[in-house]
Amino acid sequence: MPLETPARIVSELASRGYNADREAVTLLANAPDPDAALDRALETAPDDALKLSAAHVEAALDAGQSDTPTASAANGPEPDGTASAPSNPSVSTGNRTGKSSGERGRSPVETGDVGGGPTRDTARQAVEVSGDMTGRSTGTGEYGDFVAVFRDRYERLSRQLRGRVNHRPTGALAGMAGGSEAAIVGMVSDIRSTASGHWLVELEDTNGTFPCLVMKDREIADLVNELLYDEVIAVEGTLADDGGILFVDAIHFPDVPRTYEPSTADRHVRAALISDVHVGSQEFMADAWHRFADWLHTPDAAEVEYLLLAGDMVEGVGVYPDQDEELDVIDIYEQYEQFSEYLKEVPGDVEIVMIPGNHDAVRLAEPQPAFDEELRGIMSPHDARIVSNPSTVTVEGVSVLMYHGVSLDEVIAELPDGKANYDEPHRAMYHLLKKRHVAPQYGGHTRLAPEEKDHLVIDEVPDVFHAGHVHKLGYGKYHNVLVINSGCWQAQTAFQRSVNIDPDAGFAPVVDLDTLELTIQKFV
Ligand code: D5M
Ligand code: FE
Ligand code: ZN
Image (cartoon, rainbow, N blue to C red; front, side):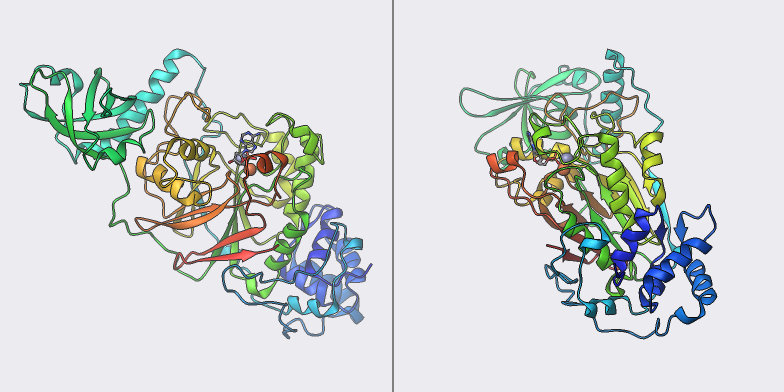
C-alpha cells in the first residue's frame, strides 16, 4: 500500500486519528519510503499530539537516517491541468474510487504535486467572528419574544432608512391634511392587489399600520413584486384627500450604498468558500472531495489558508420526507464522525470556519446556534471555528457574512423569475442585501426563532456574502459586495430530479482576499 500522494498520506493519518500540517505531509510524501516514514513519525510524535507537524516528521526522518528527504525543495512535475482558469480542474481527475488509501491508485507522476511549495504561515492568519449567537439564545417561544424580535428588527432597519426620508409615525398621518406629502418607515404587513389591479401595501410601525397605494402603471409598481412580508421599507408619497391612504411615489430599501468600498487583506492570501457537503447521503461525492483536499496540498493552493463552510456538513436524518431511502449512513453521529474524517484531509494549517445548515443537528429555526459540545467533540481534530448561522467572519480584514441560505427558497418562490431563480442564486442573495436581512419573511418556509434581538438583520455591509443551500453555483457583485453561492458536494437527489434541480456539485469558489477576485476550482 504505497503512500505516494499527499491525500493518501492524509487519509492514512486520518484513519489513525491524526491531522497534519501541509509541510509535514510534503515531507512524508517526499521520503523514499513514505510508509515507513509515516510509521516512524507517528511513533516519535508526542502521545497528545493530534496534529503532526513538520518538526515531528523531520525528527522522525533524522532518526531514521536513510529516509532523509532528498529533494523536498525541488519541484517535481506540475500536477495535471494546473491551469488556474475558472472552471478548469486544477488537479488530476485520475480514476480514484474509494476513500481508503488502499483503493486510491494514482500514477507516480502525481507525486510531483508535493514539490516544496511555500508553507502556510499560521502566525499571520487572523479570523474574527461577530454575530455568533451561540449560547446567547434568549427565546422562550412566548408571544412576547415575537414582539421583541420584530421591534428590534424595526428599530435597526428603520435606522438605516430614517436619514433618507422625512418620515412620520403612522399614528400622526391621520392628523395631516389631505394632499400633503408624507413618508413612512414600516414593516410590510400586507400586500394585496385591488380590483383595478393597483397594489395596496400595508406598512406597520411601532405605532400602528397605514395603507399605501402603488398605482399599477407607475414604474415603482415593479418593485412591489420584490417585496416580502415583514421586511422594512420606506415610502414617500401624497396623502389622499381624506387622509386615509398614501399614494406612493417612491419606495426605498435599506440597501447597500452604491459607493460601498469593501476592505481587502494586506497580503496575497485566499479563502475557499464551500457549503452543502452532505456526508452520509448516498449522493455525497467523495471522489470530488478527495480531489479538492488533494489540491489543497499542492503548491497551486498554497495561498488558500482559509476554508469557510456555509452549512449542511452532513445529510442529517429526517430532514425531508423519504430522505432515509437515500441515506448512506443512518446514524447522525456516525455522519459527523465521517465528516470529521473528510475534514482531516484538509491540510492542518488551513483555518476552517463553519456554520450549520438545515441538514445539521442543531435547531432548525434561525438563527441556528452552532453545534453542541458532543458534535464539537466529534469534529475537534481539525480545531475548526464553529459558529452560528448566520455569522460574520472577518478574515484578514475582509468581512464575510456566512448564511446557510434557507430563505433563498422563499425569495426564489415569491419573486418573479426574472428577479430571482435557481440558476442565478446570487441574484436572490442580492435581494437579501437590499433588504439588509438574511431571512425577512416570517411564517413561511423559513423558520425563525424569536429572540430578544433580531440576529438576522445585516447591520454592517459585508465585503463578501457567502451562502449555499440551493446547491447551485452563482456569483456576482452587488454594489461592490462579492456575492457567492457555493454549490454543493452532493449529486442530484431523487427529489431534485423530480423538481428538475440540476445541482452544481464539486466546485470550490476561491476568493483572493487582497483583491476580492474569484476563481472557481472544479473537482468533478
Ligand atoms: O436543499 C437543497 C435544495 O433543494 C434547496 O433549494 C431546497 C431543495 N429541496 C431539497 N429537498 C427538498 C424537499 N424534499 N422539499 C423541498 N425542497 C427541497 P438542502 O436542504 O440543502 O438539501
Ligand atoms: Fe444542502
Ligand atoms: Zn440546505
